[in-house]
Image: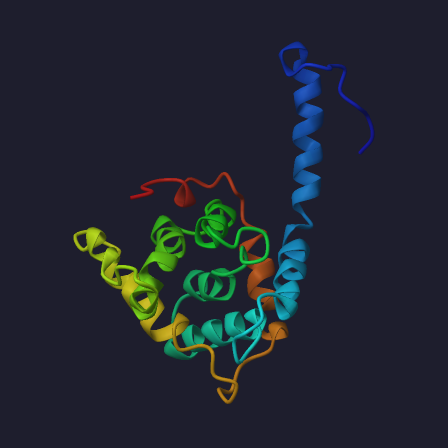
Length: 192
């Protein structure tokens, strides 16, 4: 693709300008899976202090989800739930959910978006916080699924001895998910 739009202010753009930009965005999106995988690899060197890297934690969570028989979207969520750690350390869950929202069903992105608060149950009381803050969502239809996500896949995935799949196992899954049409209504409705 070549060409530059005719405007300097968006309000002056023409239909042809916006068709050009739409095509440019679609071409750029083709490489999204590669960029996601690269960002995931960066977690191998992020946030010290845990017995495994953030990448190994993510791979371990995804391995646990896969071994439990979770569907592809939940495995993807387990793999990418902490991808925002490097760029958004204080709201990484919301960051990850926003990235995933065009590609995964609303239940899964809700779980990713809220997993940080639900994870607090395991440690925040040691820092003077309210470990039961997640209870405000008790009546939400995806509450139990988020509790399970954290209990079975997230909070327990810091074990250097756990047999964990490598990123190559999950690369085809990431490529399939990010090859989806981000405008598909299945991933837009019912954000809960």
